[in-house]
Image 1 (tube, helix red, strand yellow):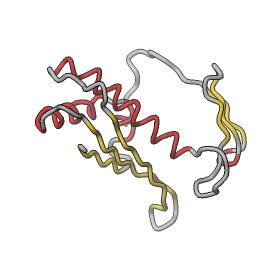
Image 2 (cartoon, one colour):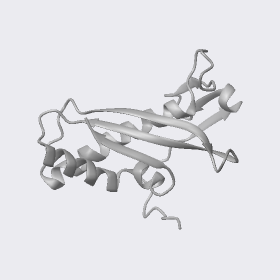
Image 3 (tube, helix red, strand yellow):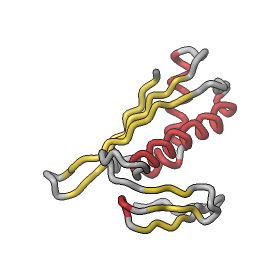
Length: 141
């Protein structure tokens, strides 16, 4: 079951050629990357790296959005160490990803950290897009 948007707030547009051995560029020119497959030791990035950065950035944004609503101030030095793993699923019939987010919230107590991370996970667009589709391991560093 899909969940339609109530209203479009923003649309990112990009053009990609060549897939994992190509290039990608956003319509505004702010992102222009050479793409390489993981493990190639060539200059460039791969979709898993882009997803790791995007999910972490989005999750921090979600924490900043929900923090005032739940009475928790998000520290200025909040950070996330993220990893996106790629591997075979269904006995090699397809490929999937798994995500780990290690959230660092200096200065907050354990209860505040848990409340903030749990609430952000419910509203983060990446969390909502992946929920029930891939493994997402959230930990509080």
